[in-house]
Image (tube, rainbow, N blue to C red; front, side, top):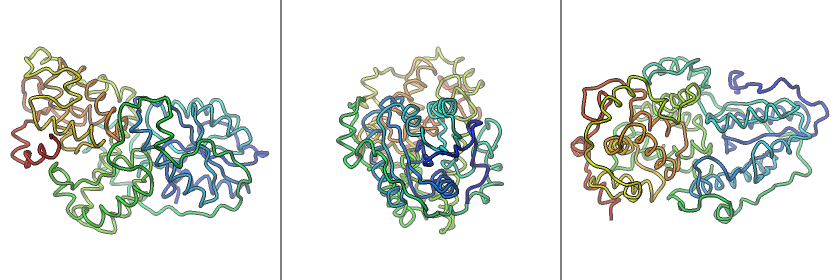
Length: 446
């Protein structure tokens, strides 16, 4: 089922009666399964008795993306091309500016359908294309269980304020998405770039090649395999084990969700077949917390800037800006994980080596950077730079919110401490009380 609330017209043009195809512009939903934009486009093509074709604009200039990120993306495009071909939809991977490439592909289109990403660059692409096209451009939201504007019309203060709003709605949206066969197939569609060898294509792109591949393979096939493994072996204990960095009890699905290789609907429906406290905890993270991040990035234009941190938090942090710092480190020392804190070093090296830091350690990692920075603005910039460079799911709504959470976003005032003021602090002793931190250090600091 595709709810009308997922669908929005981005311009005032009508469908072109003389068009010879429907065009699907793939932007955020790089998958076949539970892709509302794809299914909407298939139904539109059948209604218009036209073939459906797809295009992905592969820009080498995506902000802060490097070879690690592009390789993962290309692995997803390889899967997408194969999956779409089985549905009778040819995919063109066009190297260049996405807006320019979609305009070219849309010259003879009766209708253009796209998905919906929440980042500033994605929104700008859609705005630019909507203004440039002379045919209807429709966006179909598929990256949230509950569409962002339906969940709330404003920026929410915290999880406790958005949770009841989402809970009131999510049963309406947690429904399977029907698929339809495509009635007409395209005779000829230029495939553009070959994506059968993602590593080779990534290596020749004019991008930052200094960060190597992470430890996990991207793409819908790998995402569905990981989901199946997680449901079978980890979901039942997720509520107990997800926060322990010495136990691999997290879902390890965040990067697949970030690149659109996996739908949150697919994850939620699979988990709901196994009710229990693990599933409850997963839905809290997958729907409430993740979509709280979408809410922040959608409604706050400063979502990736220090100015997006709440006023109360900036005020208290700046009141303590002159407090003595326990240590100062150069960017090179931080990058290599060479501080006097072995737990921080282990977390940094896990991220650099694998592309993924355990989520609980990400919080501690950020709190220590606040302690070691000259001020909160510098800390915010350093966290984003490191996170977005090495994390496979960096440059994501969850990442931007996670960094700002360190500085007080979606939180409340706590007891006052040096440097932090009334922003929540974290300590190494707290880690040791909860977890076997020596085992964590041994795993990542050789």
